[in-house]
Image 1 (spheres, chains in turn red, purple, yellow, green):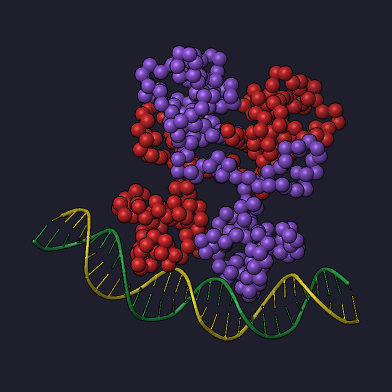
Image 2 (image 1 turned 90 degrees about the vertical axis):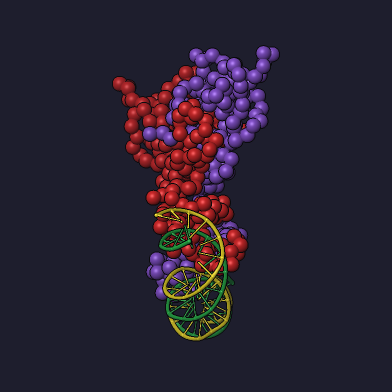
Length: 195
Length: 195
DNA sequence: ACTTATTATGTACAAATGTACATAATATTA
DNA sequence: TAATATTATGTACATTTGTACATAATAAGT
């Protein structure tokens, strides 16, 4: 029911995606001119079909390309099985890292890591860490904590002596709070730009 | 020039951000009803000001909240200096991982890593790797390559014996192509969801 | 207190918009 | 070939849209 589009409909939709990616569709008149049609009803007819089949979605009086068709192409992890899958651009799903990490949530923020105290869990200098604000954390969570008035990203732990923070790097000692330790938030994602 | 908004204007803008985040603004009439005004000219007046000051931008006949005010709050890396900065939500910049990694580029795609052959460079099982398609890579780049008809993510290297692929895990041996080695793309980003 | 901006509301109107209806050309299917 | 679906174009029209103009009420600055 989803993919039974004619060639022309597919072409039309792909052009829409290219031109109006994650923007609201403009008026039929404008699309008409942009695409070289002579009647805005041609556009209406296409849009109607694409809307019914779920390729376009309505939101706040505006039409958008459905989020399934935005974001990066997410290729299945069993790439090995045969690379025809990527070649053919037979894409399973689309992904958005912003959505994945809930970046737009007001209680979520991002900061850039400095230092190598967490390399053993794959957090490197320069990585972006997405933090979700919360006062409570589970032991074992990677947290952004405030220890003795300093911010630090460490693993939240507890032993018989009490709460402490563990750097994930054998060369660093664990941190036991002298005065105070409070949780600012929990790490929910790591993002690294290479090159 | 950017932040000289009155309290009401700020409130209005923040409400806009909340409700129409990364969507095109609907008509004044709709915003009017949504926000409880009685004249759509109230909306027009606010929008006019916000547009002039760069908080709203026009695109394809539609208005959007400027991208500066979308995405996650990016806190400066020198968080240590004093945590008032986060507390006050005195945010420097906004960030979008989708933009950062160029996820929407047609020649870019994402796949999920399986295996631990790259843990030494902080790429773990389950991480998302963003790949930019290209046939050429520099030695030292992390590439998605096709060796003897199999896809694999490794570091691209060369020595006196020729080209080879290096797993970034001491427990794995290097891979020398028996028949063929071709580059499919270069890793441009790593994204990990925690929890 | 006086003066000036900001804010809220209203009216009027030309232009643009979506939709309905109609028609013919072209593909597709039976 | 006949019958049906898709595609392209056009006309007509009520509704909606943005804008201009006008007026108070409120807030801010002097």
